[in-house]
Image (cartoon, rainbow, N blue to C red; front, top):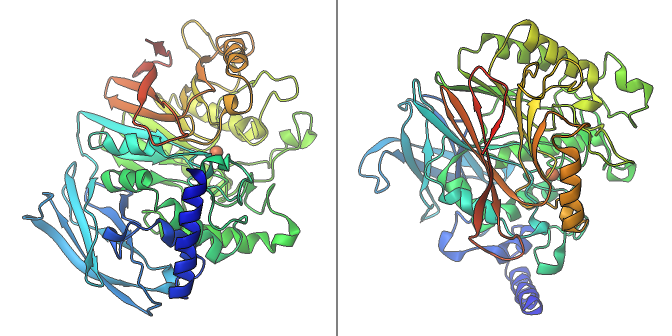
Amino acid sequence: MKKLVLLCLLVAITACKKKQEYPPLKELASALFTTDLKPFYHGVASGDPLQDAVIIWTRVTPETQLPEVNVSWEVAIDSAFFNVMKSGSTTTGPEKDYTVKVDVTGLDPDTIYYFRFEALDGRSIIGRTKTTPVNGDSLEFAVVSCSSYQWGYFNSYGRIAEESPLDAVVHLGDYIYEHGEGGYGDTSIGRIHIPKHEIVSLEDYRTRYAQYRLDQDLRAAHQNHPFIAVWDDHEITNNAYADGAQNHQPDEGDYMTRRDIARQVYYEWMPIREQKDLYRKINFGSIADLIMLDGRLAGRTKQADSMTDPSRDDADRTMLGKEQFEWFKDQLQSSKARWKLIGNQVIFSYQDWGYSGFRLNMDSWDGYPVEQQMIVDFIRDNAIADVMFLTGDTHSSWAFEATNDPFEQYDEKTGDGAIGIEFGVTSLNSANSNERFPTDSVKLHEGRIANSDINPHLKYVNMRDHGYLKLTLTDSTGLAEFKIIETTRKPDPGIKIDKVVKVRSGSTKLILD
Ligand SMILES: [Fe+2]
């Protein structure tokens, strides 16, 4: 079967190469086109909702290179478009990779809208989105991270697409991975990165996003819910920081050039409002403020080499950079919403991984202890309640009573002394521990590190499964459902809830069902 798929792909690629010179490189991705969608093969998306506005997005793929394409758009309150509330037109072209982004304003709060585009005698699929509430009763989010095309099918995105209208999909990064064929992933099922080499150039990054967005499950997730996204490292390259990265080598050119390319393409392909910084706050009325941090490019300094690296405790070691740090404190202090949600890339809480050769992760907040402590102190000193960190990166699920020191100012029985809670979300499909170690060993390890002498504040862990976090918030309660999928190895609808964790407002005690 695999050989047949590869053969078909090869035939399609060869045919495309003969027929047209354009698009370059993307002739490979064009083998994945669904012809009915022409010229909007990459579907539609929406994001960064406000009470009166939302970003809508699409991409046009002309058959030949055109200097400019006119695109019209409509936003309606019904899916038949009998009641069009807003409409307009715009242009796109090769300078933005034929992507289209419109900030639709003048909308009503807490309202579901439908949107579509027209260009080149074609019409896009219909997207569904939602504005934020002023005074809603509850909010529902899917919280996600880490989707790697080469690690298998995006069944998690498919299941998110089927959720009833969400207030947002909060994407905490690793939306794409930079590696070449088999560089990180199991290519045995034939989901191979395009291009086949590690992405470095502008054309490389654009092609990689184009390939991901041809995945039908990811396309469906974007079609059905607004996204609020930040990058982590793999949108640039592994373990990125402001002026360097572990996976950037001198023979790959200037890092800053690569970083700027990665940033440009991210903004082209993601439904994000154009602004100076990626970090931003989105208010969801009286129930929640979502404070999205950029822990990679805004100001992060290079990671310490190890726990014993004396520079780990340097006062100028920073995850956020001074400007973002001050902004973050302002957002926490000025928030009038019940829940202060923090969209955060790497684990904030102290986290002992429990391996003899690997205890603390220098790429997470434990590697930036001075700034971590300053945030803890700020939250404590200002008695800021109902802080909830939402974190990606680890390809595992976690529920912490959040603290950087679970051995001193913290009571593991009451949760007192924690500065909030932290939910770490597993990967949508990127490999987790039991894709490297036997499942029974991983389960034993989970038992050793949770509710234990080394991590008394860690109340739940799952290092074996993929999926997402469904988060439901009311004024009085935060409810986290850790949803896990059956498999990533084939298209499959299987999904179940692995664990339900609750927290009451005013408390930092996690309640496990
Ligand atoms: Fe990841």
